[in-house]
Image 1 (cartoon, rainbow, N blue to C red):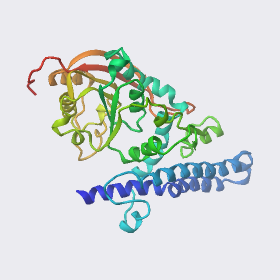
Image 2 (cartoon, rainbow, N blue to C red):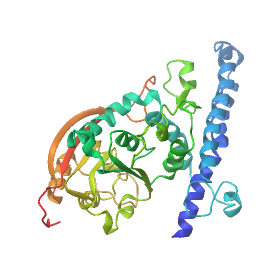
Image 3 (cartoon, rainbow, N blue to C red):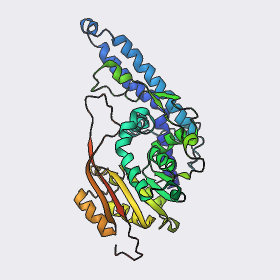
Image 4 (cartoon, helix red, strand yellow):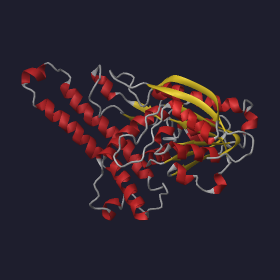
Length: 365
């Protein structure tokens, strides 16, 4: 198992290290196709030469960001002994799967959602309703001190930061090493707001209205967590599978709230998630969730996946022992979308609040 973990960490690390090469391969394919055009067609595209040069400039800027993330992995305690200086020597034949290369590019877009001004509308739709429901639990800020909130599937940790800014203690939990390595840099190593320039859309060639849309620069982060959270904030992170990370008994009845943003549908078996959350919550504690039901393992051969409708999920919540206090359907949210694109997906999410009853009793699971 340790060897499998080390190999997995090595593959994710290599996916970042290889970003310049894999992105250059994408860009070179586009440039090669344009070069096949006849001169008359090229003459109709007066900015083509500029466009080709900008591809390489933007990939270069993203590569500098990715190198910063890679360097941060020296400090990231993964317990494997693998780092950028030895990963190739230890695993000379390791081939990175294409979907892990894709995740590096999608992580750059996730940085926009969580840590750029341009992501504010998505955060307003996906995070603000959760924060409002959390604050409604304890309207008086001074009474929030000592309360513990858990955010599983916290991604790049913006929601964890926002919870702490409102006076609660908060721990984020994340399984994805792409997310963990990237958030480590944002949370620990960036000292100036807007100091990193990235180009999140440069490797996406379709559905642009204007040439410049593909080459838009975004500056991150729009705030420095260590400098802007209250000085006595109880902020922490845990790495690993959600159920495994909180299996130990000392986590039981230890949390006042669990906030889930686009998380519940990452379950192999949603009943396991719900029972785990129920166990973690104190009596009177609340599960506050917003997201779709895009069950992540639904189309993966060989993977366990229980896909429920919202109607069935409500029944499961109540069957586990929760009381549903709030239910709002059709909350429209986008996810790492490009607002200038000619195509994007809108999720019609459900916002709900489910409470573990105050009465102490053993519920038949």
